[in-house]
Length: 298
Image (cartoon, rainbow, N blue to C red; front, side, top):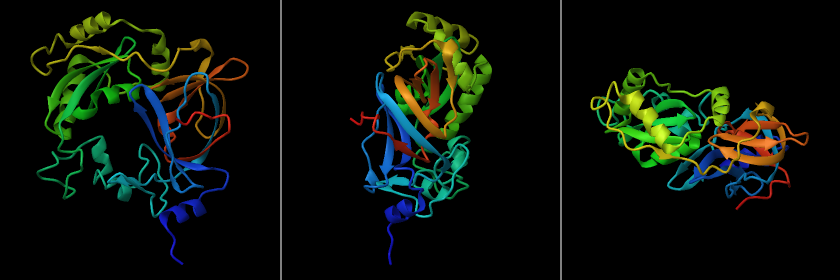
């Protein structure tokens, strides 16, 4: 008997979970978790987590490839492959947009010439920006597709950002990212405990601009041609008492009052008043169930 990918997915998933998490994304300053509903066999509307909502979210310990979107159509992974580490797709499903997954982080070619993989990915030859993102009084240097600069800042939970330069492809941007971060002594990675600690250190736009100007003074006119700093200050979150706030492991059941979201983190308050922080960007590839208290699906 022929089985569709949907049939295979439903058959191989423990019945305790109702959906497969596909992506954590921001539309402007509205966060949403996109899931594949195992009962209906279709991608559901994004589940939003806004201040005041009741949270009841169960997350599986096991992970499976999220499949792929091609031409706007979702296709579950036919092999239901286990995934681990930073990737939530298996190499076969990821090949729909990048032939070699390691090239997401360390591009090996310009997407047009001397391609070790034999063909360029859909992002490899596109223009990229290198940017400075501000987290409190910390500067992070990163790169992203030119078409999604602000989206990248928001999904990281940055307080402000500025474009530092534009490059013709992903590999050129990665090289510039390394050169600029070394020259200005800026990090390329913000650890989660650092992110949380810096939530108490917000500056205004002029302070961020002065901070950037000072950092770039050794390389002004050489490596960078920065844009003005732009504030990113419309996250649906009021920062809680950090002395009562801590991170929580992903697998298991999470219940409480949603305080809001910033970047990849969801903040929720327990009944006794302590606050927990959940890394929602790591939820995709896990199986989940949203309890009845999660009423916000619009």
